[in-house]
Length: 68
Image 1 (tube, rainbow, N blue to C red):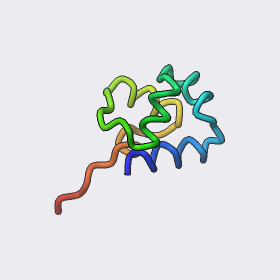
Image 2: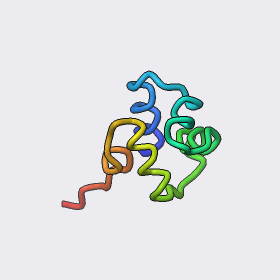
Image 3: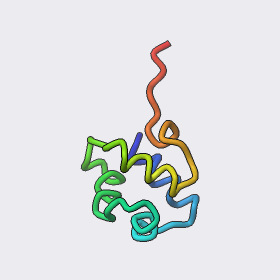
Image 4: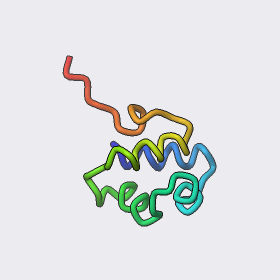
């Protein structure tokens, strides 16, 4: 889910992974690994940087399943 959200938002903003990396300060390899589902840890500061660069919220990038 998270991998799909990052990629979908990145593409909807017309950004390559390299461009998003430059805007957010998150290494392109990390973005690639997140989108590929290879990384399961998402440090908060990198998530905040990504959300700002994608003009979205951390909650939208990393949704929490509704238990209700």
